[in-house]
Amino acid sequence: MKRILFATNFSDSCSNAFQYVKEMIGKETVKVDLVHIYQVAPTTLGIIPVDALNSMILEKRENVYNQLIELRNELVPDQRGDVFPVYGVYPSSDIAELAENQEVDFIVMALRQKYSLIDRMIGTITAYTIKLAKVPILAIPSGAKYSPIKEILFPTAMHFTDELTEQEKQALEWLSMFSKFFENANIHFVHIKAKSQGVDVVYMDQPYPTFDFTVSYADTVEDGIMDNLKKSKADMITFFKPHRSFWERLYHSSVTRKVLYHSRLPLLIF
Image (cartoon, helix red, strand yellow):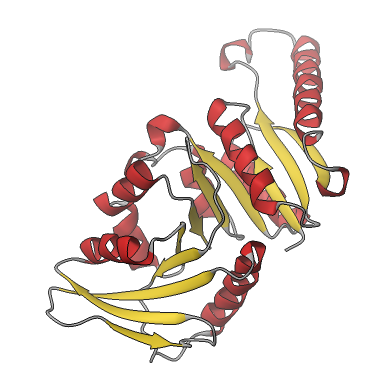
């Protein structure tokens, strides 16, 4: 992991998320790029002369640039990346495009307090960026405080006996590299069998060495995830977005509301 893109709107939630990032990366040699997508008030468009509008945009850009520089100065010199004050109408698209162009390893964004319930996030910048981005996104709930990440829970639709696709193999390799940020945090895969009775079975070193894979039983997938969150004492929860039907079901379910609202767990979507 060499480069992170941190997207900010300078809100309290973003300030909290930035503090989380600083503690998360510690003394690692990783560059943190900063981006803010700025606009001018829509009411001024088409009303004031073009020259005046351009001046307003340039003034706004300078202010945003200075704010980003001030934020970057909170990092140690070796971790200071580039700053990007970007004038745009569609922040999610701009952030996703910038992340791809800069070849960052992942994006960090904050969840505002009133949108910390992810099932109410539809239409927010973070939600749309998750849909558009080609790189992983780490979403930090408002109020989340960093503590060493030791246990990462990975609910998954796949079974460890399944033959992994090339995309899944690459994703798991990425997740393994990501865990090294935290001195090789333990990654716990869990596959929930809904509406079934049975005893949970844990397979060690599956689907790769050092991982473990639990086949768990619960009335619903959501209940199974919540049960395994408690058992694993997870510090982070992660989802693999290309498992679309599985991801979308959870995206709209109450389980994510419970996870984020009650435990303030950071959410990694990759």
